[in-house]
Image (cartoon, rainbow, N blue to C red; front, top):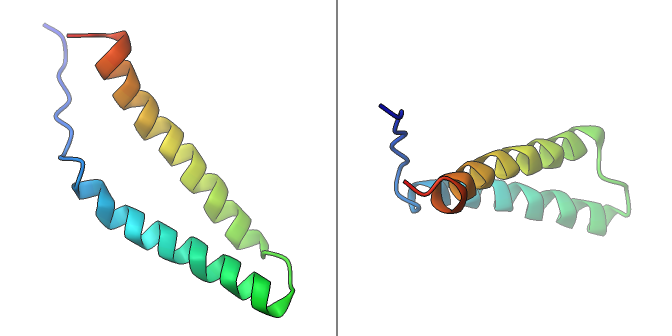
Length: 69
């Protein structure tokens, strides 16, 4: 029997999107206003968001298009 993963509704992830995009906007706005480069913690944050996005979207694409159940 294949293991089924029940994913939350798409709207659930909008909560994380608001937090992530707010952080990105504040970080980039601060960098633009001060003329200082993005600090290392900001780069690590963006890198982590990118990896998490690849993982989540990759799982959805795999489930929806590659392994059609």
